[in-house]
Image 1 (cartoon, rainbow, N blue to C red):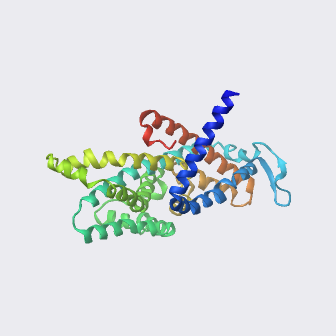
Image 2: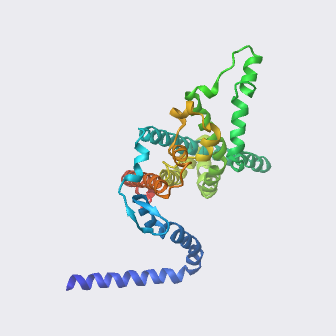
Image 3: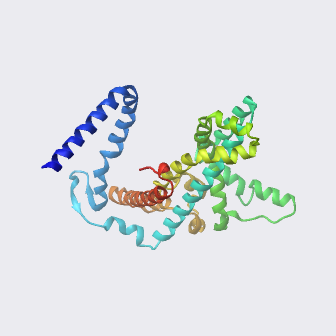
Length: 318
């Protein structure tokens, strides 16, 4: 009885504290409503639809009226023995995209923040950001015109300097680096904006105090800027890990296309599923792939967040 009273009293205190905070910051909570409504409507309410991955979906019967088939919809992922290879490729590519991409974004953001000339800083930022708005179809055209055997830009240079032409589209190994290069070229500018905003939020008093103590630009970067960017870096890494098995389909498909010679090094889950289901419109198999990717990402985020919480609790998600 006493325990119930204590719990009831604690609940009342929490409710009063919440209502007080709600009234005191009502404008901020109102600004949060559109974002909360978006996530509830488009992310939380559709979650029961994941059940479609375990049924033989029939439009007339609906998701929960369709026949339950267990793991049958997952068989096409493993029946050809390609699951390990496409999972490994997707995972490794996204780790490189995430890790190397964030490092380059931080480096560029720091370099731009150290530039005093405003017009040059804005021009450089616009130039770096521009590739983000270029369609991957155009990127695929760029790649083909660069690496085509007969009249590609690279092979044209090789012939002019007396070297033999290189058959890029018959060498799977080199495309790992080409794809990474195009991805970084395309996405670095957009990610850099986040770090520029984080740098702008760092108190100038810290830099002034370091300057008075005799710290030069290099020391201020290594002992103030980079440590202050660490929480942002960790947060972006954790967000990125949630979709680490969701590859950039538009990038891979437009650059590699249907060249089966390059599949061992360039095939990811998204392109494999597209080829497997392009001739059949199957909701259940598509949902099975999405479920596999989501569960893998969830477990990875929980694991990494647990490790970060042990090392640096203030930087963890929860």
